Length: 523
Image 1: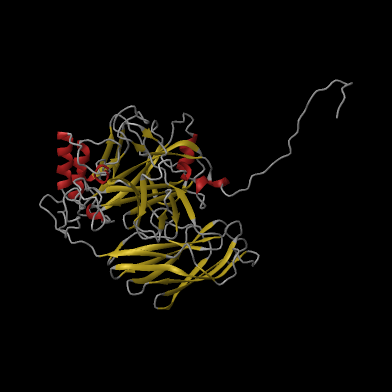
Image 2: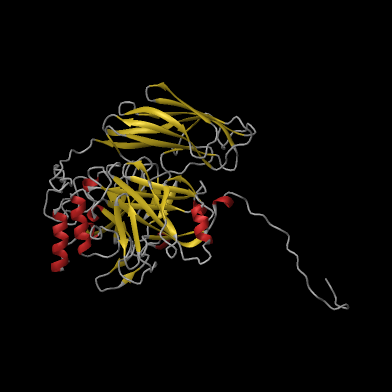
């Protein structure tokens, strides 16, 4: 069980600002704030703001803080519940974000399977995995990215798979081992369970059991479920875009803005009616023109900066209009694991995009790229190290010129609106950065894409710029540019190279040389 302390900043009516309203669980104003979780079985929150993770969940979990004496004053944050496997446990699903993203009926999706071998060398693994056979059909299996052995998967009974992995050569693989990827077909809608089961055998190169518990044992981190939804029918308009899907309202049924929705509040809901339509674009435009701030609730205000560049302006209203037309998608989550924080010894980036109505974009029609940058190095040694990185997921497709070092990586679609890149790299640097680029074509033919169907997701458009050189990229038939320079979406440090990840430190005895007079008293 993992816990995390919610930190809450507050601004009082007299303008007094309290940062870290609940530092380390010590509530300075114990009677003022209440907390709630929309899914306490996955993540609960106590009266002091301490969040406890109980298990995986198929969607983001939201925790909300409200004033006790005025529940209209509130704010919330959302996060993924994704268990990490203990040594000797099995994990299925993605390591970052929602473990198994939603899938559309009629689509195929991939389920990665991991074994945490810890410091032991994994040689052999046998397990059984369960899945909801009424909603899912098993198709095939392939060996994982860092498993050099063979993998055999078969259907024991309806809804139960057997998985065996072994190596014939000497040695083994330690750490978090991606042993297999399972392909499924989403046959019917609903909440479908998968990934639970049992560990039958988990042996290292010396035939010793991996993990502190005896086998057979129950799988913990891999116990998942996913949401399978029916594809929404859309009709193409005369301009080549996609008309907004008509659907039944899930608003609160009361006066606007809705403080509580009957269903899930949709991304882009600026007018507070719980659903996203092109009316939200008009609402934001009117807000910007009239500068009316009274009567708005935090759930509305949190949706104003929809292009995620930290500035609310007319570009956000235009972005909403483009999402409503099916031309671009919302960027709802970016997660990064640098080498020093990743058991796989890679830099891993996951990006989640959603279209109108919180629907996943069509993968053949949407391409996602990640712009990786780092501080300028006149020796070009950092650029060379980056260029020699090995990509586990994604592929390097473009560089940015001599003065803009780094490169653009085509992200791999994982399903459910999640795209990712993962690389083994010997580049260690502070100030590493990423920005998200998307190119969309409603027709699926990614050629000669209009500018309205491409978007570079950067931070503040105003100077000073982190990168002060112009950027112009031609990606999948579209041009994405920042003519005066740009500020990246996220900056992080990668302080460890993949080659040294998992290698224990070595220590040498310290030797000190000192000069003393011949007649000095020693000891």
